[in-house]
Image (cartoon, rainbow, N blue to C red; front, side):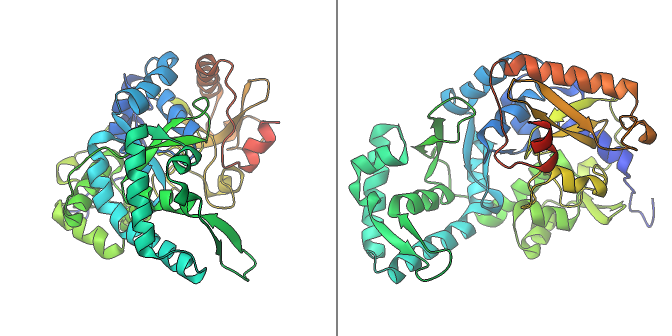
Length: 402
């Protein structure tokens, strides 16, 4: 404690992570909804990542696929939609209004303006025509319930209108109105991702009308989203918050003030927790292991990751765009990577340590190896015959997955 500001070190941050992110065995969840509530958002740009993130945190992982299908497409208690930083996530249904108002509106305005501008440059129909097409397409989607982009274009042929994008540039291309418009409608919170065309690993999906939700004042929604995120991931710095939300720093500071967040001292500098969350947190009684998927919300939760990830491991575990691949965790730290081979075998590698003793030079010994092996067996059991390849592949995943 310095000048009344409490210090929270790496050990306590890792203890919070193990408990609040439902990774320690004693903290595991009973349903996908509990997992999503604990994490606020599950990365959904790679559909399989949602299921893998849920399965890693369920007490009984055998029901991962059936239960996650139920939540996403049966009960609709989880919704895949655009959110922070123009990324697709799976959110608790009750949070959709908060996400839409806090992060979607500003991005949506830019996306629509960009589409109208690109169409005008190409001599394509104007904004009035676009609005008529949009209204007709949404009405058709309401009648169909769920539809692929091509199925929706059967009902509203104007979606097939093509225009040249970036004419004369090296990246010139031909876009259809439907492809771009559905993207805009997704960010605007009017449509969401529906059931995939194939299995739960498929990246081909149907569209559905977004569930109705109230329109919230953006500042109120930002405060609520930040409150939820700090409950799950606090403490965090301003830089973490700005990165995760995609907001301006002024928005972050206004939201912190609105919820009365408390400042704490971190190794990186000043961090913030909820006012009621300042008491010390002790970790799980036993160290824990986890195999988390690419884009897992825990691995991607903070911009500053040195407290759970050795910077020397980054080149092996991230792709060129900054997406993290499948990771091996031991007691709150990333210690390696994993992959699934074509024959279904889950293989993993410890990257910490001297490279000859499976990480034992850094304190990752036989108990850790046994716990990690058990998690690999657990993952193998519920995956069964399913083969999973991350959408964003990283060096260690490519090497292990051969």
